[in-house]
Amino acid sequence: TDSTVVALVLRHRNWITQGWGGIEPTADQFIGLGNMYVADERFARHYGGIEGARYVRDAIVAWVAATPQSSATS
Image (cartoon, rainbow, N blue to C red):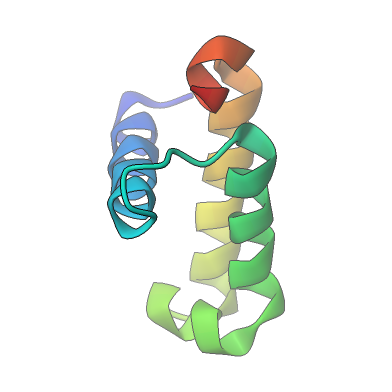
C-alpha cells in the first residue's frame, strides 16, 4: 500500500475516531463505512462522487488487509 494512501486512510480513521468520541472503529466497522460511502450518494458527494467514494473504500479495504488485526481493531 502506498505510503501516501496509508497516511490518508489513517487521517480519515482518526477523524472517524474523534467523531465517535474517541472510540476507534473496528476493521469491520471501518470497511462498512467505506461501503456506505459508495452505496449512498449523499456520502459519495463528500468524496467527489462515486469514483472518489470507491477510491476511499478501496483504500480502507487495502489498509485493513495490510494491517495486523490488533492494529486495525484497537
